[in-house]
Length: 201
Image (cartoon, rainbow, N blue to C red):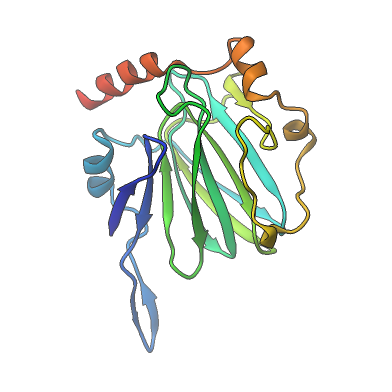
């Protein structure tokens, strides 16, 4: 598999090698050693989640308080989504920017997002199935959201998604500026220290 860092530091695109023959296909969807080599520390797997979305559904921008935060390894075994990593780390050189990866059941790519990054995707097909391997279990009081439609962030959702459909929670989520003013965003300096400590484990 090939792993490359995206324009948002701490996010990576994972492209597996697909081995196909007349019986079907085989590929490695996750390799802990290859991922750890790329990110510089061990990815602690604590929980697995699955969502199924109709075309146009937007889920995010979501993130969790750090520590412990919640790193994510995301794939789409059925259908297609555009998955976005958003830099919401106060003090980061790329604060407020985003990058994206097409996840689908053709190329079978994945995306890794480090703790402290915002995560959002939009479904391009009906029954788009997304799986998330995450580094910490769900803890509602520590989970937060930012509006995916915030013009300051300026996420470009493709026309192929059609009419966008958001949950009431995501519709009501604060903008990046509002979350920053409220002290809800992670600190880039604190995250650097957190990841440095992870690397020594």
